[in-house]
Amino acid sequence: MPRLIHFFPVVLACLGGIPLVCKEKKAIQTIAFGSCLKETRPQPIWEGVLRTKPDAFVLLGDNIYGDTRDMSVLQKKWSVFSEKPGFRKLRETCRILAIWDDHDYGENDAGIEYPKKVESQQIFLDFLNEPKNTSRRNSPGIYDAVTIGPKGRRVQFILLDTRYFRTALKRTPNRQKGKGPYGPNESDKAEILGKSQWKWLEKTLREPAEVRVLASSIQVISTTHGWETWGNFPKERERLFGLLKKTKANGVIIISGDRHSAEISKLEGVLPYPLFDVTASAMNQSMRPNNEENPNRIGDRYFKENFGLLKIDWSGPSPQVKMEIRDLVGEIVRKAEVDLKVN
Image 1: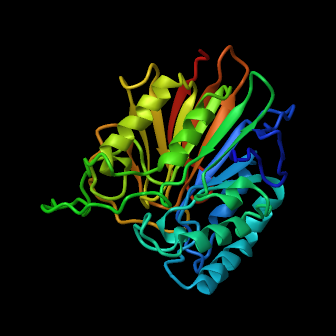
Image 2: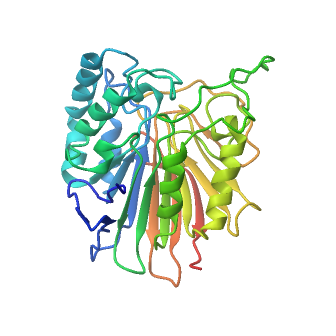
């Protein structure tokens, strides 16, 4: 059964096994996103988000800190988040799209080995008001895709699941000072996405769109910090880049979270166009500054509460995208721009 393409709050059905695409006349212009929300703490950042008037908001994981194998506890934490006044107000005015990371999946740094992943998936989809008969409900993992907008101004959201199928992390035997505990797993059997998700992703990347927002809970471009990153699975990372080239997928911008700091990374020479990874984290937690290396970083990291914003200008021959990190009150603290030339 193919993955259903939909958007919140409207869900589109499948005709003859072919997923439908939302063909709204109005093009999306503003996309907000963020990660790492402690549900027990105040969440004043929603006021800053609301001031930007986003057309869509992407929750990038650690949307709660569940960290439990007791599904009643996990469900209660999602309920606490759902009732946050700022988030409720956003949900009334804006499409909500979402992926999970380890803490809302259920366990710190967990992957395929987490024993409650099946139950956790259903609780996550309950939070999103996902209908009971969709393929996202009835097949493993929470990956999904939605394309919104008219021809020539289509935005495709590709929502990856980096947890359900992922091989357990490999600890490095010689941890370096200032770096995390994990190292690269070079095994051909080491996975992030899993067989079914890779097959779906290739099909999804071949669908027409002018802008593609690839949502990954963990960073794709930054690889050397020793914490969770696609760099822990270098063959999977190369497979991703290879698939982007193979499918000739244009207009890709990666958005990611997890790190409790924000940065914009740029990778050149791998694809026919520069690839950006905009990391927005954390929305209600701050981090003590450190000197973590990232040779692909534009500028420096931002360590206070933040969220990300993509602003699309459709007026030219190709879409122009402003990528921004915004602070607690919605002021720009980091930025970059890209011209997504249409192939």
